[in-house]
Length: 114
Image 1 (tube, helix red, strand yellow):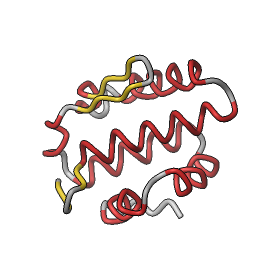
Image 2 (tube, rainbow, N blue to C red):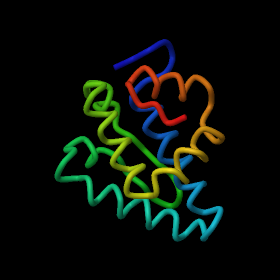
Image 3 (cartoon, rainbow, N blue to C red):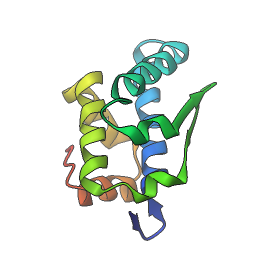
Image 4 (cartoon, helix red, strand yellow):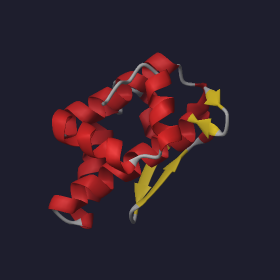
């Protein structure tokens, strides 16, 4: 799914990077990487495209094949990540960390986090 210059690939990458930064604020960057990798692994069976997301050394790489994933499927994935990490805390801080175009993309997916 593509909207303007924003793609599922870019928004997923930026969403996970922002989530790692948020977790690192109250822990450490090493813990935040492990936490996101653990969340992703938890979701691999439910969301097959999750296997195309790679986290290594603080870098998040998302295969462009994710651009063909439906909006509904991507929204469900983001909601699961939020629920696992901590719904209220993560939603509040994601609004502060993500750029307006990324927040709009999430809103267009039907994910209202604010």
